Image (cartoon, rainbow, N blue to C red):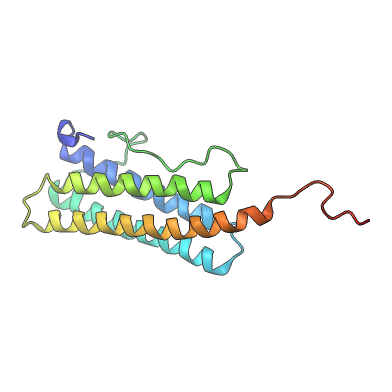
Length: 164
């Protein structure tokens, strides 16, 4: 993605919107999960995205002091969203969608960091957030692999439990 055609303000608002959507996605995803360990991991991701939101909001306020922060309804910069296409989507596919969004967020933050001098705090913070997004990607990948192993057991075969 070529982010040079976007203003710094639009890029930071996009990052904010993306972090809010990711936080809310993970929080809603965790709701119906009964497995305590998985629920805890998903809530951890939600909390991490909230921390990213706070960091980006602080950066926005530093870059544009006194300017009102208004999160747009539609992101000014196109990024893959965290959307579940159907309610019956297997959890491994949900994790795959989330992995793609985390990878896109990583790439976005790496590119966004280039808008700041390499020695600046903003540059370093954005690269740090990018590395955390890849950490989320890897965590989701582990959970996806686990889900793929167990989803095979959840397939029901007609008449499998019928006795002789």
